[in-house]
Amino acid sequence: MADKKKMSVEDILAACRTENSSGDGAKSEESAKPAESEAPSSETPSAAAPAKKAAEMSVEEMLAAARGGKGAAKAEKKPAAKPEAAAAPAKKAAAMSVEEMLAAARAGTGAGKKEKKAAAKPKAAAKPAAAKKGAPKKAGAAGPIDTQSILAAARTSAKAGPMSKAEAAAKGSPTAAKGSPAAKKKSAPAMPKKPAYAKAAPKKSKANEASRRGFIAAVSGCIGFFVGASMNVGFTALGLTGLIGSLGVARFFFPNILIEPPTKFKAGFPAELSTGQVETKYKAQFGVWIVRAAVEGQLQIYALSTVCTHLGCTPNWLEAEQKFKCPCHGSGFYKDGVNFEGPAPRPLERYAISVAADGQLEIDKSRTFQDEMGQWSDPACYVVPV
Ligand code: FES
Image (tube, rainbow, N blue to C red; front, side, top):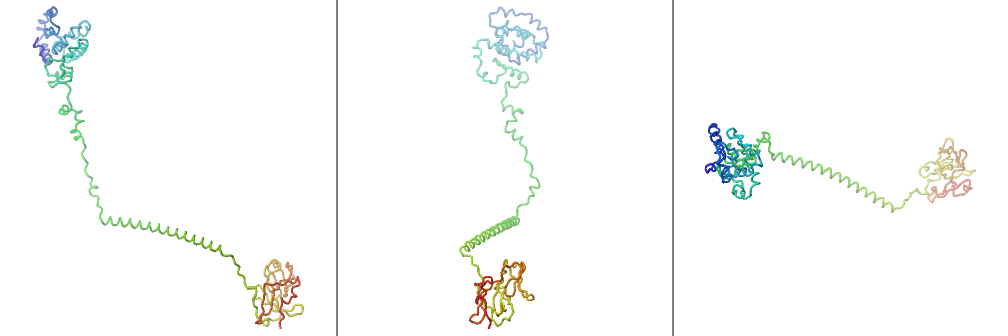
Protein backbone atom coordinates (compact mmCIF):
# COMPACT_ATOMS: atom_id res chain seq x y z
CA MET A 1 0.00 0.00 0.00
CA ALA A 2 2.72 2.33 0.85
CA ASP A 3 4.32 1.80 -2.52
CA LYS A 4 1.06 2.42 -4.39
CA LYS A 5 0.43 5.64 -2.55
CA LYS A 6 3.75 7.01 -3.62
CA MET A 7 3.17 6.11 -7.28
CA SER A 8 2.64 8.96 -9.68
CA VAL A 9 -0.09 9.07 -12.28
CA GLU A 10 2.32 8.11 -14.98
CA ASP A 11 3.35 5.10 -12.99
CA ILE A 12 -0.22 4.11 -12.50
CA LEU A 13 -1.02 4.51 -16.17
CA ALA A 14 2.13 2.58 -17.09
CA ALA A 15 1.13 -0.15 -14.68
CA CYS A 16 -2.26 -0.29 -16.26
CA ARG A 17 -0.76 -0.68 -19.66
CA THR A 18 1.67 -3.36 -18.57
CA GLU A 19 -1.03 -5.29 -16.82
CA ASN A 20 -3.24 -4.98 -19.82
CA SER A 21 -0.55 -6.38 -22.01
CA SER A 22 0.44 -9.20 -19.60
CA GLY A 23 -2.73 -11.24 -20.24
CA ASP A 24 -5.86 -12.28 -18.60
CA GLY A 25 -4.28 -15.09 -16.54
CA ALA A 26 -3.07 -12.86 -13.85
CA LYS A 27 -6.32 -11.00 -13.87
CA SER A 28 -8.28 -14.13 -13.26
CA GLU A 29 -6.09 -15.05 -10.37
CA GLU A 30 -6.27 -11.67 -8.80
CA SER A 31 -9.94 -11.30 -9.57
CA ALA A 32 -10.55 -14.53 -7.68
CA LYS A 33 -9.88 -12.60 -4.56
CA PRO A 34 -13.02 -10.62 -3.84
CA ALA A 35 -13.22 -7.60 -1.78
CA GLU A 36 -13.63 -9.66 1.27
CA SER A 37 -10.69 -8.09 2.90
CA GLU A 38 -12.16 -4.67 2.27
CA ALA A 39 -15.60 -5.16 3.67
CA PRO A 40 -14.86 -6.58 7.10
CA SER A 41 -11.86 -4.39 7.52
CA SER A 42 -12.16 -1.75 10.06
CA GLU A 43 -9.68 0.45 8.25
CA THR A 44 -10.69 3.70 6.53
CA PRO A 45 -11.82 3.53 2.90
CA SER A 46 -8.78 5.52 1.78
CA ALA A 47 -6.51 2.91 3.31
CA ALA A 48 -8.46 0.01 1.90
CA ALA A 49 -8.61 1.22 -1.70
CA PRO A 50 -4.97 0.76 -2.51
CA ALA A 51 -5.31 -2.76 -1.28
CA LYS A 52 -7.13 -3.58 -4.50
CA LYS A 53 -5.09 -5.06 -7.16
CA ALA A 54 -4.37 -3.08 -10.25
CA ALA A 55 -6.34 -5.39 -12.46
CA GLU A 56 -9.50 -4.88 -10.49
CA MET A 57 -9.12 -1.15 -9.96
CA SER A 58 -10.67 1.30 -12.28
CA VAL A 59 -8.74 4.28 -13.52
CA GLU A 60 -10.61 6.54 -11.20
CA GLU A 61 -9.72 4.44 -8.26
CA MET A 62 -6.14 4.36 -9.30
CA LEU A 63 -6.05 8.14 -9.71
CA ALA A 64 -7.76 8.56 -6.37
CA ALA A 65 -5.19 6.28 -4.83
CA ALA A 66 -2.46 8.35 -6.43
CA ARG A 67 -3.89 11.52 -4.98
CA GLY A 68 -3.75 10.05 -1.55
CA GLY A 69 -6.91 8.14 -1.34
CA LYS A 70 -9.06 11.21 -1.04
CA GLY A 71 -11.15 10.61 -4.11
CA ALA A 72 -11.57 6.95 -3.31
CA ALA A 73 -12.71 7.73 0.15
CA LYS A 74 -15.24 10.21 -1.15
CA ALA A 75 -16.50 7.76 -3.72
CA GLU A 76 -17.01 5.14 -1.06
CA LYS A 77 -18.82 7.54 1.17
CA LYS A 78 -21.68 7.84 -1.34
CA PRO A 79 -21.82 4.64 -3.36
CA ALA A 80 -25.59 4.43 -3.49
CA ALA A 81 -26.15 8.04 -4.48
CA LYS A 82 -24.45 7.69 -7.85
CA PRO A 83 -24.71 4.18 -9.10
CA GLU A 84 -24.05 5.20 -12.71
CA ALA A 85 -20.81 6.89 -11.76
CA ALA A 86 -19.79 3.79 -9.85
CA ALA A 87 -20.68 1.52 -12.73
CA ALA A 88 -18.62 3.46 -15.26
CA PRO A 89 -15.28 2.86 -13.60
CA ALA A 90 -16.18 -0.76 -13.39
CA LYS A 91 -14.68 -1.17 -16.83
CA LYS A 92 -11.42 -2.84 -16.47
CA ALA A 93 -8.28 -1.03 -17.33
CA ALA A 94 -7.18 -3.88 -19.45
CA ALA A 95 -10.01 -3.27 -21.92
CA MET A 96 -9.59 0.54 -21.98
CA SER A 97 -7.51 2.52 -24.39
CA VAL A 98 -5.41 5.45 -23.33
CA GLU A 99 -8.06 7.92 -24.45
CA GLU A 100 -10.71 6.12 -22.44
CA MET A 101 -8.50 6.09 -19.42
CA LEU A 102 -7.92 9.82 -19.76
CA ALA A 103 -11.64 10.42 -20.16
CA ALA A 104 -12.21 8.33 -17.07
CA ALA A 105 -9.56 10.30 -15.28
CA ARG A 106 -11.35 13.53 -16.18
CA ALA A 107 -14.66 12.15 -15.01
CA GLY A 108 -13.02 11.00 -11.82
CA THR A 109 -11.61 14.43 -11.23
CA GLY A 110 -15.06 15.94 -11.68
CA ALA A 111 -16.54 13.35 -9.36
CA GLY A 112 -13.84 14.08 -6.88
CA LYS A 113 -14.73 17.75 -6.94
CA LYS A 114 -18.40 17.02 -6.39
CA GLU A 115 -17.51 14.73 -3.58
CA LYS A 116 -15.30 17.38 -2.11
CA LYS A 117 -18.27 19.71 -1.84
CA ALA A 118 -20.25 17.06 0.02
CA ALA A 119 -17.39 16.08 2.24
CA ALA A 120 -16.17 17.96 5.26
CA LYS A 121 -14.20 21.10 4.56
CA PRO A 122 -11.23 20.33 6.81
CA LYS A 123 -9.85 18.12 4.03
CA ALA A 124 -9.73 21.11 1.70
CA ALA A 125 -7.99 23.03 4.42
CA ALA A 126 -5.35 20.36 4.43
CA LYS A 127 -4.49 21.23 0.86
CA PRO A 128 -1.02 22.79 0.65
CA ALA A 129 -0.85 26.51 0.04
CA ALA A 130 1.36 26.08 -2.95
CA ALA A 131 -1.29 23.94 -4.63
CA LYS A 132 -4.00 26.64 -4.06
CA LYS A 133 -1.93 29.30 -5.72
CA GLY A 134 -1.52 27.16 -8.79
CA ALA A 135 2.12 26.32 -8.25
CA PRO A 136 3.31 23.47 -10.46
CA LYS A 137 2.92 20.15 -8.83
CA LYS A 138 5.76 17.75 -8.77
CA ALA A 139 5.25 14.50 -10.58
CA GLY A 140 4.55 11.64 -8.17
CA ALA A 141 3.53 13.90 -5.31
CA ALA A 142 0.81 12.71 -3.05
CA GLY A 143 -1.39 15.86 -3.40
CA PRO A 144 -4.25 16.32 -5.95
CA ILE A 145 -3.37 17.10 -9.56
CA ASP A 146 -5.69 18.89 -12.01
CA THR A 147 -6.85 17.27 -15.23
CA GLN A 148 -4.76 19.49 -17.52
CA SER A 149 -1.60 18.60 -15.64
CA ILE A 150 -2.47 14.92 -15.77
CA LEU A 151 -3.13 15.11 -19.50
CA ALA A 152 0.02 17.12 -20.15
CA ALA A 153 2.02 14.64 -18.11
CA ALA A 154 0.42 11.76 -19.94
CA ARG A 155 1.29 13.24 -23.33
CA THR A 156 4.78 14.38 -22.55
CA SER A 157 7.05 14.34 -19.61
CA ALA A 158 7.13 18.12 -19.56
CA LYS A 159 6.14 20.19 -16.59
CA ALA A 160 2.41 20.23 -15.93
CA GLY A 161 0.33 23.39 -15.64
CA PRO A 162 -0.14 26.54 -17.70
CA MET A 163 2.91 28.19 -19.22
CA SER A 164 4.01 31.74 -18.61
CA LYS A 165 4.53 34.21 -21.44
CA ALA A 166 8.26 33.90 -21.17
CA GLU A 167 8.03 30.15 -21.51
CA ALA A 168 5.66 30.43 -24.43
CA ALA A 169 8.00 32.90 -26.11
CA ALA A 170 10.91 30.55 -25.51
CA LYS A 171 8.94 27.79 -27.16
CA GLY A 172 8.05 29.96 -30.10
CA SER A 173 4.36 30.22 -29.41
CA PRO A 174 2.58 32.46 -31.92
CA THR A 175 0.56 34.15 -29.18
CA ALA A 176 3.66 35.08 -27.24
CA ALA A 177 5.52 36.21 -30.34
CA LYS A 178 2.81 38.70 -31.17
CA GLY A 179 3.08 40.60 -27.90
CA SER A 180 6.81 40.51 -27.32
CA PRO A 181 9.02 43.43 -28.36
CA ALA A 182 11.28 41.08 -30.25
CA ALA A 183 8.32 40.06 -32.38
CA LYS A 184 7.48 43.74 -33.01
CA LYS A 185 11.02 44.35 -34.19
CA LYS A 186 10.84 41.36 -36.47
CA SER A 187 7.40 42.30 -37.86
CA ALA A 188 8.40 45.94 -38.63
CA PRO A 189 8.68 46.39 -42.42
CA ALA A 190 11.96 47.50 -43.90
CA MET A 191 12.26 51.10 -45.08
CA PRO A 192 11.92 51.47 -48.86
CA LYS A 193 14.87 52.67 -50.83
CA LYS A 194 15.03 56.27 -51.92
CA PRO A 195 13.84 56.61 -55.55
CA ALA A 196 16.24 57.77 -58.25
CA TYR A 197 14.31 60.95 -59.07
CA ALA A 198 14.52 61.98 -55.42
CA LYS A 199 18.24 61.49 -55.39
CA ALA A 200 18.70 63.42 -58.62
CA ALA A 201 16.58 66.41 -57.50
CA PRO A 202 18.49 69.58 -58.43
CA LYS A 203 19.47 71.86 -55.62
CA LYS A 204 18.49 75.48 -55.68
CA SER A 205 21.36 77.45 -57.05
CA LYS A 206 22.09 81.04 -56.12
CA ALA A 207 21.46 82.18 -59.68
CA ASN A 208 18.01 80.57 -59.75
CA GLU A 209 17.24 82.01 -56.37
CA ALA A 210 18.33 85.46 -57.52
CA SER A 211 16.28 85.26 -60.71
CA ARG A 212 13.28 84.08 -58.77
CA ARG A 213 13.60 86.93 -56.32
CA GLY A 214 14.10 89.34 -59.19
CA PHE A 215 10.95 88.09 -60.89
CA ILE A 216 8.99 88.42 -57.67
CA ALA A 217 10.37 91.91 -57.14
CA ALA A 218 9.44 92.90 -60.73
CA VAL A 219 5.93 91.56 -60.36
CA SER A 220 5.57 93.31 -57.01
CA GLY A 221 6.87 96.53 -58.57
CA CYS A 222 4.40 96.31 -61.45
CA ILE A 223 1.55 95.68 -59.09
CA GLY A 224 2.67 98.54 -56.89
CA PHE A 225 3.01 100.82 -59.90
CA PHE A 226 -0.48 100.06 -61.15
CA VAL A 227 -1.93 100.38 -57.69
CA GLY A 228 -0.09 103.64 -57.15
CA ALA A 229 -1.14 104.94 -60.56
CA SER A 230 -4.75 104.06 -59.88
CA MET A 231 -4.56 105.79 -56.54
CA ASN A 232 -2.97 108.83 -58.16
CA VAL A 233 -5.73 109.01 -60.75
CA GLY A 234 -8.34 108.65 -58.07
CA PHE A 235 -6.83 111.29 -55.84
CA THR A 236 -6.35 113.63 -58.82
CA ALA A 237 -9.98 113.26 -59.82
CA LEU A 238 -10.99 113.87 -56.24
CA GLY A 239 -8.83 117.00 -56.11
CA LEU A 240 -10.28 118.32 -59.36
CA THR A 241 -13.79 117.72 -58.12
CA GLY A 242 -13.01 119.65 -54.99
CA LEU A 243 -11.48 122.49 -56.99
CA ILE A 244 -14.51 122.74 -59.26
CA GLY A 245 -16.77 122.79 -56.27
CA SER A 246 -14.69 125.54 -54.68
CA LEU A 247 -14.89 127.64 -57.86
CA GLY A 248 -18.65 127.18 -57.98
CA VAL A 249 -18.94 128.34 -54.40
CA ALA A 250 -16.74 131.36 -55.21
CA ARG A 251 -18.86 132.22 -58.30
CA PHE A 252 -21.92 132.19 -56.08
CA PHE A 253 -20.61 135.27 -54.30
CA PHE A 254 -20.39 137.35 -57.57
CA PRO A 255 -23.64 138.74 -59.22
CA ASN A 256 -24.52 138.08 -62.86
CA ILE A 257 -23.69 141.11 -65.02
CA LEU A 258 -24.99 141.60 -68.61
CA ILE A 259 -22.46 143.58 -70.49
CA GLU A 260 -24.29 145.51 -73.26
CA PRO A 261 -22.87 147.76 -75.89
CA PRO A 262 -22.95 151.44 -75.12
CA THR A 263 -26.24 153.17 -75.92
CA LYS A 264 -24.50 156.14 -77.61
CA PHE A 265 -22.20 155.88 -80.56
CA LYS A 266 -20.91 158.18 -83.28
CA ALA A 267 -21.82 157.53 -86.93
CA GLY A 268 -19.48 159.87 -88.88
CA PHE A 269 -20.05 163.26 -90.43
CA PRO A 270 -23.38 164.23 -92.03
CA ALA A 271 -21.68 165.21 -95.26
CA GLU A 272 -20.48 161.64 -95.73
CA LEU A 273 -24.08 160.57 -96.41
CA SER A 274 -25.66 161.20 -99.76
CA THR A 275 -29.31 162.11 -100.21
CA GLY A 276 -31.51 159.04 -100.40
CA GLN A 277 -28.77 156.81 -98.91
CA VAL A 278 -29.48 154.13 -96.29
CA GLU A 279 -26.32 153.32 -94.26
CA THR A 280 -26.41 149.67 -93.16
CA LYS A 281 -22.93 149.31 -91.66
CA TYR A 282 -24.20 149.97 -88.12
CA LYS A 283 -26.97 147.33 -88.37
CA ALA A 284 -24.99 144.37 -87.10
CA GLN A 285 -23.14 146.16 -84.31
CA PHE A 286 -25.74 148.68 -83.10
CA GLY A 287 -29.01 147.61 -84.76
CA VAL A 288 -29.46 150.98 -86.43
CA TRP A 289 -30.00 152.18 -90.01
CA ILE A 290 -28.91 155.78 -90.70
CA VAL A 291 -30.94 157.32 -93.51
CA ARG A 292 -30.56 160.61 -95.35
CA ALA A 293 -33.80 161.35 -97.15
CA ALA A 294 -36.60 163.87 -97.55
CA VAL A 295 -39.54 163.47 -95.16
CA GLU A 296 -42.62 165.54 -95.92
CA GLY A 297 -40.51 167.91 -98.08
CA GLN A 298 -37.68 168.33 -95.50
CA LEU A 299 -34.23 166.78 -95.88
CA GLN A 300 -33.43 164.93 -92.66
CA ILE A 301 -30.89 162.51 -91.22
CA TYR A 302 -32.56 160.07 -88.82
CA ALA A 303 -31.73 156.69 -87.17
CA LEU A 304 -34.24 153.81 -87.58
CA SER A 305 -34.43 150.71 -85.36
CA THR A 306 -33.85 147.36 -87.05
CA VAL A 307 -36.50 145.57 -84.95
CA CYS A 308 -39.71 144.56 -86.77
CA THR A 309 -42.78 145.89 -85.04
CA HIS A 310 -44.61 142.58 -85.66
CA LEU A 311 -42.71 140.02 -83.59
CA GLY A 312 -39.22 141.49 -83.37
CA CYS A 313 -37.43 140.00 -86.36
CA THR A 314 -34.78 141.97 -88.21
CA PRO A 315 -35.86 143.14 -91.65
CA ASN A 316 -33.47 143.64 -94.58
CA TRP A 317 -32.98 146.72 -96.75
CA LEU A 318 -33.77 145.92 -100.34
CA GLU A 319 -31.99 148.62 -102.43
CA ALA A 320 -33.68 147.56 -105.66
CA GLU A 321 -37.13 147.72 -104.13
CA GLN A 322 -36.31 150.72 -101.91
CA LYS A 323 -37.98 149.08 -98.89
CA PHE A 324 -37.32 147.21 -95.67
CA LYS A 325 -38.61 143.67 -95.89
CA CYS A 326 -39.05 141.41 -92.86
CA PRO A 327 -38.09 137.81 -93.67
CA CYS A 328 -40.26 136.36 -90.95
CA HIS A 329 -43.82 137.23 -92.01
CA GLY A 330 -43.27 139.51 -94.98
CA SER A 331 -43.94 142.88 -93.41
CA GLY A 332 -42.72 145.73 -95.58
CA PHE A 333 -41.65 149.21 -94.59
CA TYR A 334 -40.89 152.28 -96.66
CA LYS A 335 -37.59 154.16 -96.49
CA ASP A 336 -38.98 156.54 -93.82
CA GLY A 337 -40.05 153.48 -91.76
CA VAL A 338 -43.78 153.48 -92.25
CA ASN A 339 -45.24 149.99 -92.60
CA PHE A 340 -47.20 149.26 -95.76
CA GLU A 341 -47.46 145.44 -96.01
CA GLY A 342 -47.53 142.41 -93.90
CA PRO A 343 -48.64 141.94 -90.31
CA ALA A 344 -46.55 144.74 -88.87
CA PRO A 345 -49.07 146.92 -86.95
CA ARG A 346 -47.05 150.11 -86.84
CA PRO A 347 -44.01 151.95 -88.30
CA LEU A 348 -40.42 151.35 -87.19
CA GLU A 349 -39.11 153.35 -84.26
CA ARG A 350 -36.47 156.10 -84.36
CA TYR A 351 -33.58 156.77 -81.96
CA ALA A 352 -32.41 160.16 -80.75
CA ILE A 353 -29.76 161.69 -83.00
CA SER A 354 -27.66 164.81 -82.66
CA VAL A 355 -24.49 166.43 -83.91
CA ALA A 356 -21.71 166.01 -81.43
CA ALA A 357 -19.13 168.69 -80.60
CA ASP A 358 -16.75 167.25 -83.12
CA GLY A 359 -19.40 167.55 -85.84
CA GLN A 360 -20.14 163.85 -86.05
CA LEU A 361 -23.56 162.37 -85.81
CA GLU A 362 -24.21 160.88 -82.36
CA ILE A 363 -26.96 158.31 -81.85
CA ASP A 364 -28.52 157.70 -78.45
CA LYS A 365 -30.44 154.41 -78.32
CA SER A 366 -31.73 155.10 -74.87
CA ARG A 367 -34.39 157.30 -76.34
CA THR A 368 -36.99 156.10 -78.89
CA PHE A 369 -39.58 157.93 -80.93
CA GLN A 370 -42.82 156.43 -82.36
CA ASP A 371 -44.74 157.83 -85.34
CA GLU A 372 -48.19 156.62 -84.23
CA MET A 373 -47.69 158.64 -81.09
CA GLY A 374 -46.69 161.79 -83.02
CA GLN A 375 -43.13 161.72 -81.67
CA TRP A 376 -41.41 161.89 -85.02
CA SER A 377 -42.07 165.63 -85.08
CA ASP A 378 -39.61 165.97 -82.16
CA PRO A 379 -36.33 167.62 -83.45
CA ALA A 380 -34.45 165.21 -81.14
CA CYS A 381 -35.19 162.39 -83.55
CA TYR A 382 -33.65 163.92 -86.70
CA VAL A 383 -30.82 166.21 -87.88
CA VAL A 384 -31.19 168.65 -90.72
CA PRO A 385 -28.01 168.61 -92.70
CA VAL A 386 -26.41 171.95 -93.59
FE1 FES B 1 -41.51 141.04 -89.16
FE2 FES B 1 -43.46 139.35 -88.55
S1 FES B 1 -41.71 139.92 -87.51
S2 FES B 1 -43.24 140.61 -90.21
